[in-house]
Image 1 (cartoon, rainbow, N blue to C red):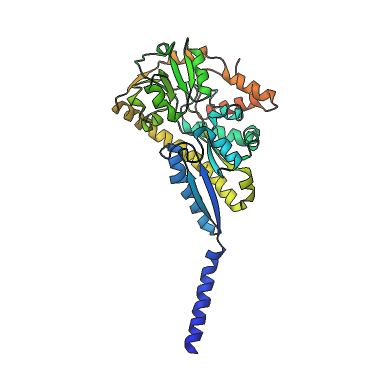
Image 2 (cartoon, rainbow, N blue to C red; image 1 turned 135 degrees about the horizontal axis):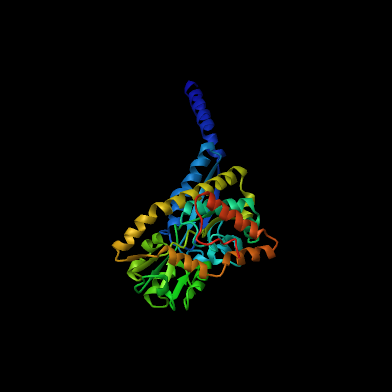
Length: 356
C-alpha cells in the first residue's frame, strides 16, 4: 500500500509536469519561394526568420510552428510565388515583386527612382514605412488574397555586368541588356539599348549564350551566381537599391492564426527586413572583391555620366505616381514622402523625380 501511494503521487506529479507540453498547439506553416536555398533572402529566412519566430513563441510556450520549407521550384517557380500564396499552395511566401508590376504597381516605388540611394537599409525602411502609412501596397496584396508583412531589400545597388569591355555608359549603346522588371526602363536613356526580361537564375545562361550582352544585377548576386565567368566587366553606375522581396501570408491561413502568432510574425518580418538589408550592405564590398578575384573588372562611372544617364531617362517616377493617382491612390504623395524619407536619411538623387 505504501508503494502504491508513492506510485500514485509520482504519476500525479508527472501528469502535472506534462500539462504545459500537452497544451502547446502545433501550427503548420508551408513556406514557398521559387529561388534556390542559396539565394541570400531564402537562406536568411531559414537561418534568421524561422529561428526568431520559434524563439519568440517559445517564450510563452503556447504555440510551436511546424515549418515546411519549399524552395527552388519544388512548388512554384520564382515568378509563381504571388499566385502560389494566393491559391494556398504556400501559407507564407517571399514574393519577388518586380515580376508583378501590373498587380503590385505601388511596390515599384524604389524601382522608379533610380540614382538616389545605394543603402539597402534606408530603402527597405522607407518603403516599408510607406506601406504602413499609405493603404495602396497592403490593398494590392489583399486583392491577391494575401496579408502584407514587410518589404525586403537584398541589393545595395544595381550595377551593369557586361560580356565585353565597357568604359562608360555610351558603351552600352546598341546592346541587349537583361533586367527583371522596371529597371528595364532605365535603358530608355541609352541610345539603341534594348531590354530583355529575365530572372536572376536565368542571367548566367542568357549572358553565356549571347542572348544578351549585359545584365543589371548587384554584386552579391553576381558572386552567388558566378557572373564573372560570363560577364567579366562591371560598370559601376550605382543605379540604386531597390525593394524586390515582400513576405506575405495567405489571407485564409492568416485568419485562422492565433493573435499571438500573428503578432510574432509581424514583428519578426520587420526584424528580417532590417537583418536582410544589413547583410546586403555588409556583403556589398566583399562581393565586389570576390567578383574581381573571379576575374572581373570594375569600371567606375563618373558623376557626370550618371547625371547624364538619369537626365536622359523618361520620368518614370511621375508616370508611376500618375498611374496610381488615376486609380484613386495617393501616388504623388507617396512619391514625395518616400524621397523625403531618403533625404532625411542623407540621400539626395542626381535628379529630382518629383519634378516633371
